Length: 278
Figure 1 (cartoon, rainbow, N blue to C red):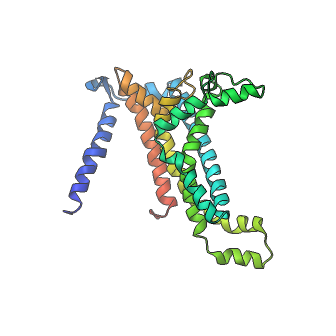
Figure 2 (tube, rainbow, N blue to C red):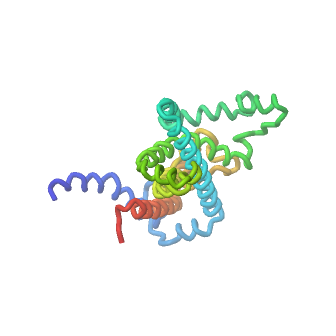
Figure 3 (cartoon, rainbow, N blue to C red):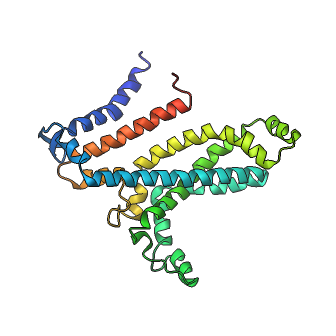
């Protein structure tokens, strides 16, 4: 137990105490971080009956699901294509990792320039071919999808690396057996590659899902939660409420909702990866 005491103390100070404080704060009326009095479940009732809470939850789920579909899809396609190229694929794989190595602030700044409706390269190209770029990130109907595109571009290299490792761990004998039976590349993909990738894709999706639920830097740089709240997620609203609100008790309820969602995804991840049995 002596070996574990320092780790447990660090866990208590860094994780458990702030979490318990936020839970306690969710039952309080506050003036910034000063607790003014116990209000029971009033903050929970205010949040759960608020239209803004459910609209923001819906936006968060769309953002997470859209980013997962794109990042996993791009990761699988890139992994299969680069793995088939042999040695030349190694060099391209390193280049493909560049987005993942960049900070989210840098990624957001780059794409903010690319999507600029006045002088950005994307809007300029669209005008050259006779298309109207519109407001791009300033369009409430388009902003969320563009943010999903940027998030997927930044994070798909992670999926690619994990899927590549899974592909390279598949025994060659299985592919040879399919070839002996007369199977083509489609049969190898369907009966060998894909079954081995499903557990990997599941665990990768859960990891990225937790990341997307708590991600705010890209949103701050790209849209600031706008326009008209179109890209406001739960995590972004918690950040904004903590910084701007006087009574942050309701904001604590929103952060607990994120915590519970992450705990659920974490438990599912542990069971999927086999670290928890039963």
